[in-house]
Amino acid sequence: MRIRNTGKVCDHVWYLGRVDSGIYLVEGANESMIVSGGSSYIIPDILEQLGDFCIDEESITKLLILHTHFDHIGTIPFFKHRNPSLELFASARAWEILNNPKIVDITNEFSRQTTATVGMTEACDPYDTEWRDDLSGTTIGDGYRFDLGGIEVEIYETPGHSPCSLSAYIPQLRVLFPSDSAGIPFEDTIIVMGNSNYTLYQRSLEKLAPFDVDYLCSDHYGYIDGEEAKHFIAASIATADRCRALIEKTYTQTKDLETTAGTVYNAHYSGNLFSSLSPEIIRQVCRQMVKHVVKELENNA
Image 1 (cartoon, rainbow, N blue to C red):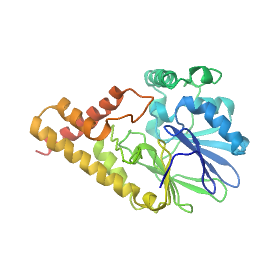
Image 2: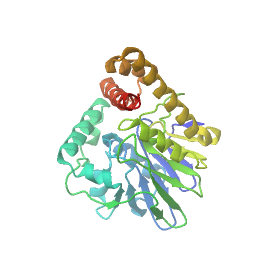
Image 3: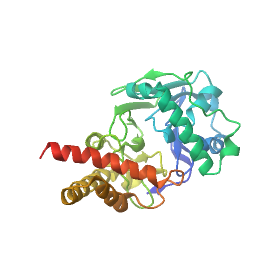
């Protein structure tokens, strides 16, 4: 079942933020960890929810970055400046990206634009949400484990949506945090977004397939529990296969990248997928996916 309300996911795990952009809090006996960073405009919501849910903010000692797209790292400067001892963790490629001044400038600009689009500029003005060169952290990758005190979180590299993507898994709770490395549970559909490398995106889905999952915690549109959670990765794999087949079929018929990207957009991505993003950004995602699949199609011809 798809659950879009913030609150307790299960023992030790909370969902915070908004339906279109969320983060998670994992509580152990010794310390707590924020998983993912969401969009900057959800900060007022999170602060209210920390109080409403009686969450001890002082117990939060770690923050895990699952990938570096601007709508997944927006709250991180605020949390780090609010608590300078907070430890940040991300993949090696993520730190390379976050140390690139041009990318940081783009990240900050997109964050400002989306905050304005959702009408939260005035509400967010009191908070420092700018990425600068004063933010750094620890590099992690496949096999890394966090012990929060009775709760162990495992890390897996799952590139494809972005080159820096990680997923996190709590075996004892059967909770998976794939960020956008799995399908996005939009309305009653599954949206796949193999932005940077569609083939790696599909391989990452296969990597996540063996996990036993009772709760699948998405960064967009909430979390999933019950039978759908158990089968969501398999369903994402099937959706990704269909999307790739459509790209290959359309390009084979038309030999035109723009026509193919338009066909894929209309079939899989039209509609108000992200209210804070312009349709052109989603169209650009389609173009990136099409270019990668077509390149592989032509190389294998």
